[in-house]
Length: 224
Image (tube, rainbow, N blue to C red):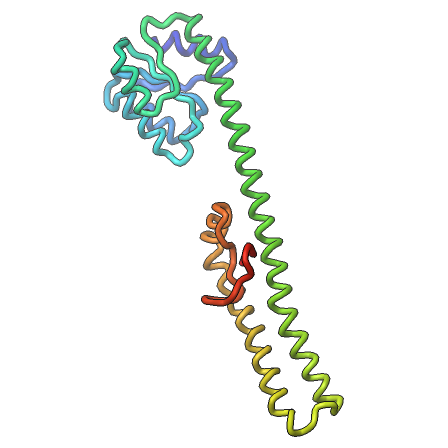
């Protein structure tokens, strides 16, 4: 059976990697991460359904096409195969024509899965970059406003427009605006610690970065 599968796969333009039992099949998958796996249900060591479950639990196993070959053909058997995470099911005896048809189906599914994964990654990247843009605008606003107030008050003091009786209040304004800028800089220092969580939250349409700190006001609909 294994030789037949290898010959059909080679005739279809693929290079098969054979495994003699379920344990070797799982080890081979972990090492090679092939796009398609053909499993016999009943194998020494791990059976085909257990290998299938392990593949689906693997971080890279969600896009692998899994075909289970077995002599069992009852309805509950098919349900068990699908519940284990297999994409397709083939009853013995296996003929070259039937196997080639299954391989063509697998090829199309693999291409669709790859295209979908590329599209999802591109969308995540676009959203991440959009979040950076929103953060840049927020950063500009949060620093520019207090900086303008600070510079304006300083200029008024230096020009003598503000009288001595008002200098104390003006110094208080300068201190307040300087502390606002310092708070933003402090928040920027925390970006690296929050970076991983922030990217995931933003992809789920949550806030990306709170430059105002805990409890700070945010305009409705704005990304922090």
